[in-house]
Length: 247
Image 1 (cartoon, helix red, strand yellow):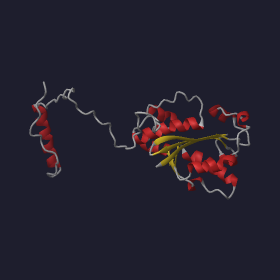
Image 2 (tube, rainbow, N blue to C red):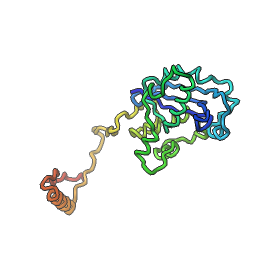
Image 3 (cartoon, rainbow, N blue to C red):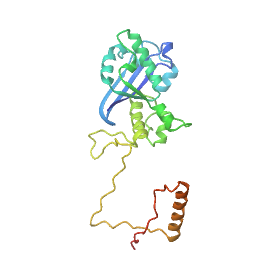
Image 4 (cartoon, one colour):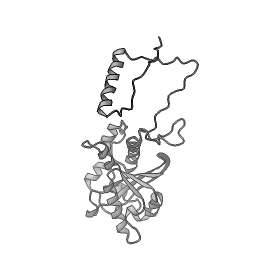
């Protein structure tokens, strides 16, 4: 399974008003493991960047003046994402801008959803945490992901953070790990749990604490109640005996 974590920065909020993409950042995951393969580019938007947008990402008109145009990088970009599942936080925003850029290039390019599938982590977070704040910063706090190095927004930085959030939110993994990182492996199974250490000759047996007689009686009474309520379909039976505790 190949996934691309994607984020963009723009000159403003509305592509319909002529705003453009100025940065694209992508990180590749295969089977939920980062491969180290990335796509990152700054773009000359051929227009002024709104002052409010500069306050968010810090990318000035002067910095972007000598950067390539979207038309210069589109084929490399499409080659990188082709056939993957894009993972984007608030996907309608980024996809709206990407479709706007493709439309500007003419009839040779189709809508973005024709090139890859799209997963919106904001919609996923709202489903998992209804009624709560689900911004990227809020999810970092909820899943204990360090984003203290994020003083300004940046497409590649936000893609890295989103990768951590996505892995934590969908499988319990809370750290972005490369496949060649020694001694570490990503959790690719949501149902997987850490294996307990095997007993060896030097390890003491775990102490077993037996139920008290009154606890057994309460348990048996509860099973009888369940049996009556279910018409005799209770699947549990009273434990006949308890292991002797280890002193």
